[in-house]
Image (cartoon, rainbow, N blue to C red; front, side, top):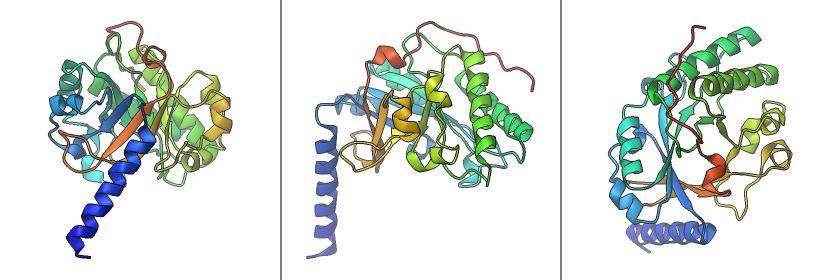
Length: 257
């Protein structure tokens, strides 16, 4: 078979697989500067009900994967506004790049990244999805205790400034490096789990301490009208009201470290 034909078959199989996994679920996408310009009216017309939009990525020198793309996401305000105008539920997330060679250094680094996120978001509105921390490898060789301290410092800073308990995005292997702690599940942080191309996601921290997942990123190879190329696909596992901001706007407050 010609190469073009093989590619067409592969694409069709991927689309059918994603559709089968999604079923009748409430579908969403998560996007960042890497998607560039997005046609949000077309996205909404394709049945997408919610979107997580990257507000910031790393804080500078510790952003090792793509170091020229750290800091505030220049597409955040546009993506947030246009998705909301199309009637979608919208949330902001921060892609973490952890750093710090000690507990004190980990906390300092986390607060620095939290401040970048807070400045980018500004404030939350009633009905926004909870702010989210994207916590996945690489972790700069940090130990489990340091990683736990990093996450705790970040969520505490964001909760204090924006007035909402952050959701945590992660996967089994990444969260395992914290010692598979259940601390954050017990503290009421909802789980956004990443596990692609499976009929049901594997969950960290003993099924997130029995609470299960609130959002599942079930594919990194979705195709949605209005977005060029592949896009991360998500489905909702709980009513919107359980992962939404209940009051707003909350003025941003960035404290000194």
